[in-house]
Length: 296
Image 1 (spheres, rainbow, N blue to C red):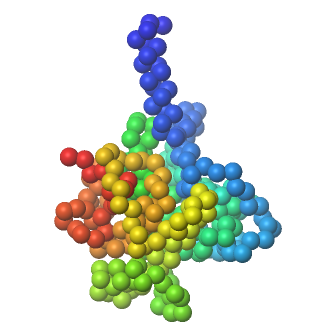
Image 2 (image 1 turned 90 degrees about the horizontal axis):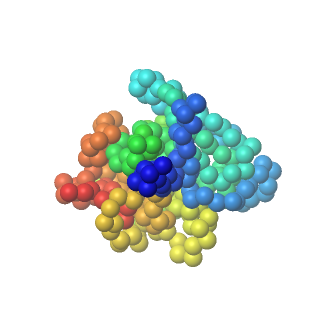
Image 3 (image 1 turned 135 degrees about the horizontal axis):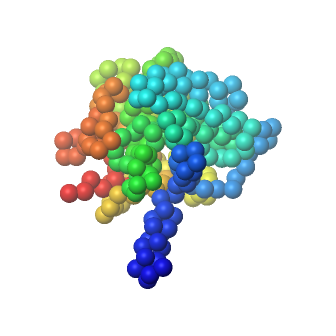
């Protein structure tokens, strides 16, 4: 092997390592290795008492609805939807993968049993994993990752499109009636939407965003609580395809909630503006610059 050939080989290996994917050529399976939360060694087995989390029935109810809502959409694309319901697995995470023409969601019971997880939060996790398959641009860079919407994009999709359809089947006024909602989130929802159902779904999405943000804080052992009123002020100089920081992810959920684009407006795999909010046209609901870089 020549020196130049060896250098190219090392470059390819380095590229694959940075993507966070595995590719099994025998089964044409491409997996997002990083999962919904950063890799961690926490395990919450079945039967371990925790204050909080959701039940096995609630776990399955959420996934039943995800399957019912999106199965036909996936089949129209020429794909199949498969949700692996891994209730007995203690892993505190979730992941997405493609296997041929099958869109796979791996949903673990350990995450569902975490004390920060609510029904709304778990629905957001499922929406995020589904969003890796169907969240449009921006895609994870690199030839092996080109099928997947990046982490921030999947977060944005979860509240921009998926949770709106998921919560539309509920009596959200009754669910929210006696709950103490974040006043910043409520004010944002009221400012953006005139339709009462849209407002209620926006407000309920704030519960989902706060649930998973609290999960991130717990797993990362962070002392500062994520808050709708304390947005991340950082601006990246290039696209961040990996997990943004905790506050940045909450900001992304908030942006998706507040975007006035309709849930039935199609997204694009190449144009991030399609079906979403973007600067300078929109003031509210745009992808946060703490992970998103629009380019030139």
